[in-house]
Length: 88
Image (cartoon, rainbow, N blue to C red; front, side):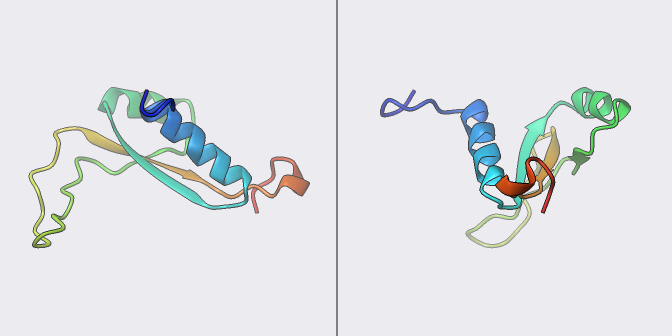
C-alpha cells in the first residue's frame, strides 16, 4: 500500500487491463521464471518469452548484465467496448 492505493504486480496488471478496455494497445513486460513461460506455452498462451533481456542504461546507453530471469511480454490488444471483447 502507498498513499492508500494498492501497489505491485497485481495493481499493475489491473491497470493494463483497464487501459485495454479503453481501446488502447498495451504491452506489459515482467520478469518471470522460465518454467512458468514453458507452462504458458504448453497450454497455448500467446505470452512471448523475451529471454534474459539486457536493458540499456539511460545514462550511457550501454547494455546491463541482465537479471538472470526471463522476461514475459504480454500484448493486450485494445478492446472496443461496443464489440464486447473483440480486439480492435
